Image (tube, rainbow, N blue to C red; front, top):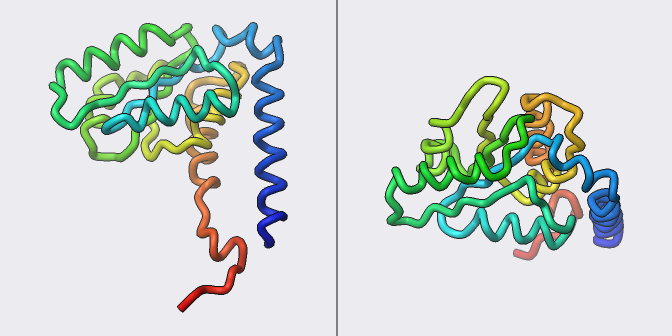
Length: 168
């Protein structure tokens, strides 16, 4: 695959996502969507959400919680709890964390509640874009599975994909 063959599909995908997210009918039913809270080490959550909003526009049903290296666990727990309350519209909340076994995931796991709150680890930008584009007609677990799959499908070895000759 050449660079132009790769860039064109990505550009088309992002354009379609942007058009879709700016559609008034989509904006109108944001309250019916599964909400999201991104929880990560450092400022990653904030920056991932900012990047997603640069692509799809404002995303009111997703919040970011950045946990500093020396933040108090109880304070982080309370901040996640407030973020869940802020974005939840009764359709469930998907918490996206950076790394299984890390402090953000360990704290987020305290909120697990069947049919109401799920945690997906290994967050990346395509996962956030996927969650932002979900229309709200599915149950929490179905959305969680699609978001997880989108994250997996977005990982490539660029050299293999482009079949680029390697420098020695």
